[in-house]
Amino acid sequence: MSNSSSITQFLLLAFADTRELQLLHFWLFLGIYLAALLGNGLIITAIACDHHLHTPMNFFLLNLSLLDLGSISTTFPKAMTNLLWNTTAISYAGCTAQVFLLLFLITAEFSLLTIMAYDRYVAICQPLHYGTLLGSRACVHMAAAAWGTGFLYATLHTANTFSLPLCHGNVVNQFFCEVPQILKLSCSGTYLREVVLLVFSACLFFACFVFIVLSYVQIFRAVLRIPSEQGRHKAFSTCLPHLAVVSLFISTSFFAYLKPPSISSPLQDLVVAVLYSVVPPAVNPLIYSIRNQNLKDAVQKLMTRWFF
Image (cartoon, rainbow, N blue to C red; front, side, top):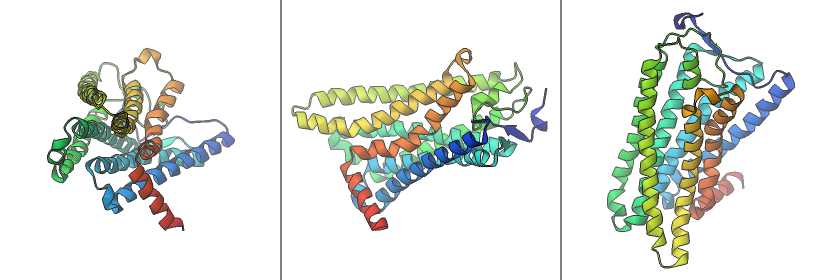
């Protein structure tokens, strides 16, 4: 039995027992982290520097890359430090900061993905009103709303989570601090208000999910009415990257936070955490650049300027 007021640090999940495997995991994490930094950094720089890419969709993509950089930088540096120095400790303040930043960035990212679905809906279903509904000021306001929603939600959720008394030690069965693992350490019967907040959160996220689904139903109906096959292909190609990113983000995040405790296991929790915290930031730049020829050209021009 321990009290949250007496806890000064948490112990994270160790990836391996042997030193060789720890170093192997460190180099693997370092490679993934550098790839995510490079991919997202190139997209941010290319969009910021090339005026041809100053469109609403690319503006939202720039914000998405910033959020991806923030989310992977919240978990990976500490995990790599622990692997390199053969430790699992994280301070109480560091754990609180990780929870806050992850909630902030994940909520802001999901809000932004919802806005990007609206962008695609307007572009395909109401193209004549695109410039009016998604002007520069409107885009800035929507992006600010996404970031503000994430900040407000993270503040309330983090304060509520760490106000719960912890009676089950300080061992977090994850390689970073996250809410479901912290709740497992709380005293039985004291986390009812946190469960209520989680249910409320699930309802909000479900509402965003329904909005995205309805947007794409309208988008697909509009695309199928396009007479030419080339026009349908072009319309689909602008939506598929966003749809792939949304599917990856929602499937992994929802499973991580909403799966029943009865099917939970340390290995399963670890795999799911890697999927939703590592894969999207590393893969999103590749997904968005595959079908965006203008973005690919800008990135290639940028790399040529840097390296040659």
